[in-house]
Image (tube, rainbow, N blue to C red; front, side):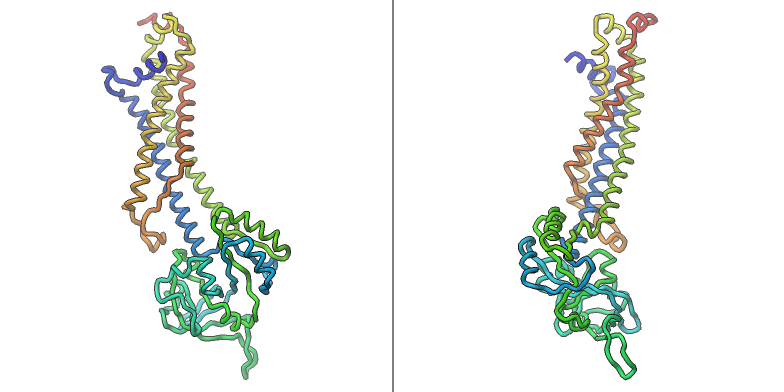
Length: 400
């Protein structure tokens, strides 16, 4: 194709063997922009995946409660309706109270569970870093940061004080308290859970709180986490009022909305790098039009139509965009792959709760970045190509 041949020739140096310096600078701008966007987006995806996995490790896919958070009494009809929709489920009790050990005390969140059923719904049993997931003989399992704050370890005794349950004494009714033994310590990788959460045996907690056979709610697990919203809606319709089912995305809506917004803003900011590269392309093409004025005049004098002149300079800009985008995409893929495989960038675990930089590449990100880069490169060629097509042949070669 005639226009493409001329466009390719304009990118080369005078010797015709190598790219010209201006071409290399323009291609480098696109290359840096595309590779930076892809690497940063892959790192953000990795952080989001790491956070999601940690949330789902300790949070069920779906939670069923009553709108008023009134206690739920399990019945055969209720269980059958839930079993028809989900893979595994487990009842739980959720409440807040106070824990005391030696001279330390703290507010905690208590979660009463059926240990065997809980293993099928969350990954808490696999997060034990000391002791074991055992609730025998008034055993409890608590978070790593809470254990450090209280100064306790496996085998130590703690006292749980419940302001919601009372006991009679010679001095009147006082909040009920009971001693428990630390059987295990877990690390979920999230400070909020590690510093406040304590697991109890469901039946033992029911007895301690005087709740009888009722529970706070039912947690469930499904095969596909991304179908949780649909299944939760179906459960809400199936169970009817006053029951409602919430999926894991809804329960962490603010967090995931913030993460999504962060990714969008980051993408927009990094696209500015490609825009800077686009200005380099514009400047290069305008300079090229000025330098090639005689050649353009000769081409037009020989009968080359303005449309072909436009195609030539658009071709120059697109070749820069294609080469820069291809090299940037390849480098972004290789760099992200190496970061993910060899994990040679280490992070302070006590700050980020992860030791290595997480990376996850997504095809949609690569396609979006490539499309945006090529579109910006194309738009950058329009004005210079238009100016070149408007040159009058006689004026172009008069002073040459």
